[in-house]
Length: 254
Image (cartoon, rainbow, N blue to C red; front, side):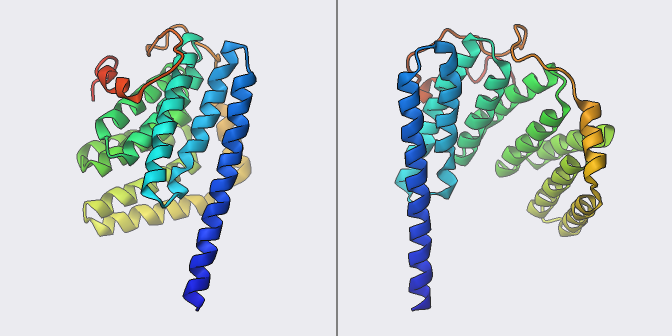
């Protein structure tokens, strides 16, 4: 009886979450229809894509696949819009969204390519925190693809940047991912040491110290850049995810 109650509560919670997501999606799609200024549509496309990215909370495989495909579709619409208006920060978010879905679908080449584009924008803008974040995400994709040596290289670079900029919270994140990597390599002793180091760093963080470190890194970043070195497209009225694969060799080698 207790098991039945727990299962019923679980399904009720899942249905409630799905209803909330659907309500938010309907609201955003209505907002999109009412928006006549093209330059404002990219952000709405991005918000819709973000709602579909909640597919991790969905258990039904068919619904999950539908959410993934819609996330890809709306992210591509947002990407084309941001690209046309040279909004590189919007483009970076889209690259991260696309990488997340492709990693979930085990399409690792596509996931790596989009993370490389995200990383390139962060390097161009000297945004160290997002360089580190993208390196950690890249290492995760490479771990999933069992490219452990390449994953180690990304994490080593991320750790060096953390040490240089004294961003402790990000360093803890890097150490956690070192633990994941060592455990996948069956080097459990090193995995335990990395996890212990991450725990120690988190315990040592003082809010004031972290705020000071973040302030020292802060730089004025333009919202748009004409020399980002990434995709430049005309706006499209629709986007098909099947077109993505044909572009994967243009800007960065894996």
